[in-house]
Length: 581
Ligand SMILES: Nc1ncnc2c1ncn2[C@@H]1O[C@H](COP(=O)(O)OP(=O)(O)O)[C@@H](O)[C@H]1O
Ligand SMILES: [Mg+2]
Image (cartoon, rainbow, N blue to C red; front, side, top):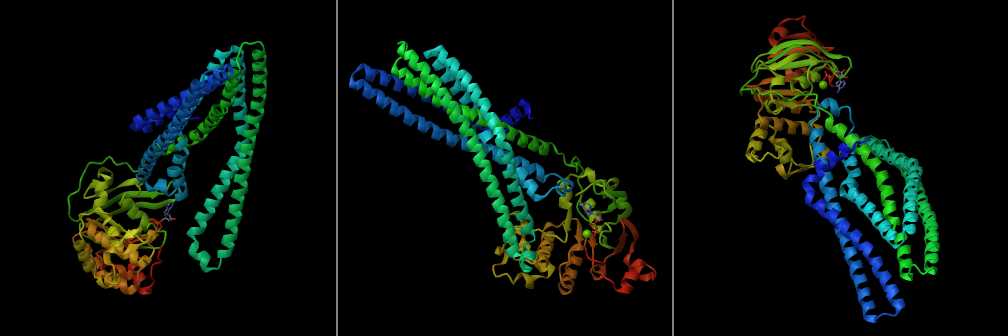
């Protein structure tokens, strides 16, 4: 259970910036409560005065006052809704922003363990859950309690016995309503589960959409979809009926009893001459006015359980620390870099050792080609160098500076990576290249395209840089996405360049066009090229061959070529391509 302190911290953190609005909302609710207590009094007077045969003008004024107050009450509740929505949206949007920002800065070991669905649920679902918490449940709770107290006090004032009866009745109703809510919980849970099932089904199927449609699975897909939909419909319907029926029946039964008791009491008081007809009206009216605050209190007490679950999950996410610390303060000079791996070993989580005691030094301006079978640890090696993960043991240094001592943002600037998976987002080609960095001009981009020698490819887009790319890179082949990634690299001008099977989705001819461009790109830079074709690296300075997470060969390319028994020459002789990953 979230403690009072946790609730308090949450309210403090997110409600404080909207303090004025929140206080106005509280004020409006109080005013509304006062008005709703006043109006029955006017009616009571109206009835009594009418019975006494008072002046018609007085009655008229009472009538006008009643109408004006009723209209003001409606106006107030409209304002309350408006303010509540404003506060709810502003606070939950702040919360969403904080959570997203926090998650974006968490390392890959956090993200690989979680599906996108789970993250959406954390960042959006829980915030949506907390909407009513911020949009006024707290005030509503206070307000309902005040209204309840007000009504009971007024009735005590009329006659203490009426006050006692209604106090006992109120307590019983809240307890009964909460109990009844408990009955509805399992069915509400089932409805939520049916919803999660439907979403899970859709997410899974849409990710495999191409395979489903191509293999004629559409009708099966639709049939399953209807089954999930139907299950959701039935579960929601059941939950709704159970919840409404139970609340409704409790309210009806208890209020029927209360009305009978109150009416009988009132009638006997009236016969004894201690109260007027107007008072009877007032008492009955107030009794029935209790429905709303009582239901609100019971509902809100239940809702706090929902908030509780969301607050716990949100706090847990906020407490999650980045496994990659960013405490460094050493900056690198510009120019080609020296890279050193010193007894580096690594495993993902508690899994098997993926890299085992890796030692090597890459001199300034050297281009290294890395070869090895799928799963030999090539990509892991460069993930460590770009600090997506930290080594389990050993150290990695650039120009003699431990990676951990370099600020992450600075390291990201210095290292440029192109992998097999380039993500293109919805927007035009320009934005996909510059990431909205307005200091990069179109002319810079054209220079990069010319340097890469891919003008012919680029000229095929009639709208040039304004060509729109659909989300997830729709409209571009994966090979074209790799070209975009290479242009990004040209624009970024990092000192260390890493290409992880950058050409795996390009055909041999395009790759050979690009080779000269890549050679140009590597001049005056330190580079690591992971290749799945030997031809990709037949020009580099050094070759490293990885096997099961260990270096089995690392020498100058010419040296390896001159040694007929080298692994590299074996690969060249057999002409076998290293299996692409
Ligand atoms: N995120 C990950 N979590 C757990 N194991 C992983 C992860 N990524 C890769 N591995 C494992 O690490 C090993 C090396 O993978 P990787 O470095 O991608 O190899 P390569 O790039 O040479 O094909 C493989 O056995 C792979 O299954
Ligand atoms: Mg790989």
